[in-house]
Image (tube, rainbow, N blue to C red; front, side, top):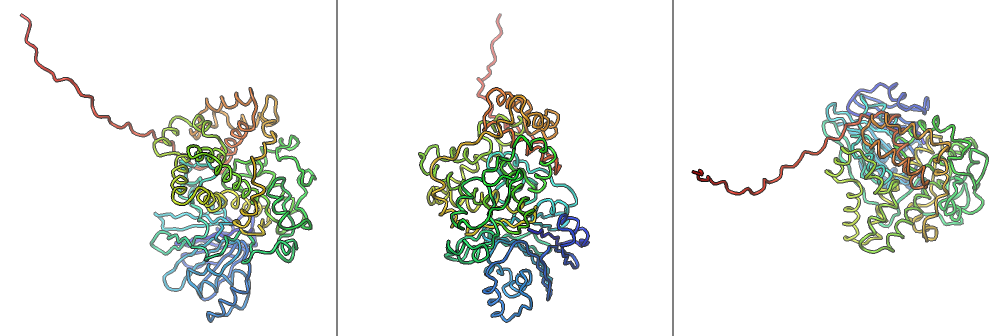
Length: 555
């Protein structure tokens, strides 16, 4: 996946965009004019309209026919040319005929200038944006490092971000862990005009249409057609990640689709987990680049294996693979929903949230520093907000409908699809799904039955007295480094280490890992951390005092 990025409301030199694009190097094409600039590997400009695209467009013939029916010819059928012509024909509603997994940006310089951004209905490719109210500059990019390179100064840490990350695994509702940097929601068009803030328009999917996922054609392929690597799904191989997500995609596509790999040690489907003892010594060097590639912290250590498999697929010369890591998120979400449906009305919300959280609620409350805990108590933490939101939705329709919508429309784009886009794109590979997310959700029912598989204990085995990973994580979470942010209690982190050393468990080890990745991310990007200000003490009504009477003097 190539990057797209740009700015509106300022004159940006082309070299700035090329430098921010980083790894795309000379492949980037820069389109620019007075007060605007766009960049991307797939770009087109004509008639006062410029467009850049990342991802893929499927079913181009109906789109071309619709454009030509509107009286506008398209000399080239390149994706960016189609997007540009669709915008000239349809205006801001140009996304209606688009199908596939994409993120696009269009600069319209005819008359009053405007910038239009859009993501597909599934949110398969993230699009980040920042609005500088003082400078009246709007910046965007399809990954965070590129966007941050365009900003004049580093944004601060979004104060509730640590709690959101440890509660749900990601910042939701369009937030990122950078203050003022937002992610465009799925199926959303953003319109920015000079002198006004961006307007977000949430599009309704076409009636009866399924939500497309990366590389999904307009019609769902039949299973027998999906088995052909060149005919149905465009994927050349299946990402060989151990788990039910791979099994689900293998069932849908058939046994003849080759596996993408091998894993770094030469193993295939039975590859050992990523924190193998032979590779632990490389983690201090690997993890900073890993968190830089993702742009936000990732609490699941399995993401290291996913990244390694995408890198191996690239070494094999593969350009497109079926993203079993995204399918794994769908299966896990379906399992969480089915478990919540079988629980009573009193505790289903808290249990669902605990299955979702990288760090259990009881651990989170003890890990936060005093001022940060008081800040969350005053504004409401992420778990409380999630419970209120899902509880209200479940009363309005049904528990299944509320949870399914949350998993597919909120969690999957913010966690699974975002991670797939960045890890695969970082290795110049496209991670695709053969069917839409909702179709895969239905097909995942047999794989989501029963409890979640028990953790293998690999991570915990490395966090024991004398364990290969212990020195590294203790140094990362040392009191001197934790003191910089002031968000975590140094004493509580020491107690966490003591508990893991006394009675090692995968849950405690997972908590330690989540904190380690957050601290490495914070050091990599260096966001300014505003220390939480303790909430003011609310004045209490004075107690009733007895009436004072003057006593007669004693003679």
